[in-house]
Image (cartoon, rainbow, N blue to C red; front, top):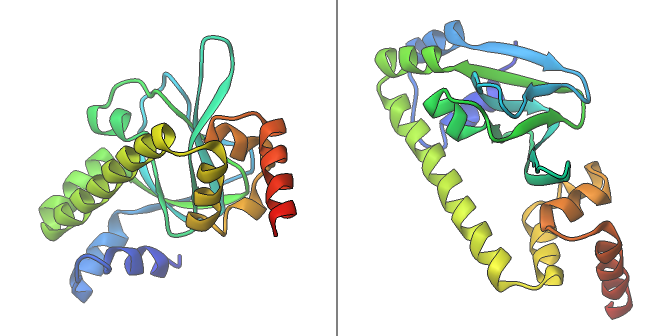
Length: 194
């Protein structure tokens, strides 16, 4: 199993010895999912914190009217989970579904606790992950309040250039909180402005 991308992701924040890498390898599970499969469904307890080795996922919830609201996409070298459900081991607010065939490194809550015991500095790494997720979430809320739909789309394109070509337009519209028709209008307007 090639977990080099995971190790590269971790070593952005902490250094691991060869022994620690071997211990980490002994604890992880790599699982393949097919396009359309769910990693977690709303109402189930999220059992894993996941690192994406390959593929693409979407995190979303379904409201009472059956409307889908996408809150996040994850591609290679990103993490995905219903963090609230995972940490508290309570029912998930979100669904996580594979948009492509995907390969994920899966960390259960028990494995993470074992890793904290065996490699204490991994606690710092996972704290950094949670901090970054929290900051990104807060910044997204501010953007939703302060930017126009066009500005939000331009920000999305700039921040996530590798995602737009991989997902349908209606999903980008859902992520931005607009209709796909309005997104088409924005894109047409941008073409005219060039």
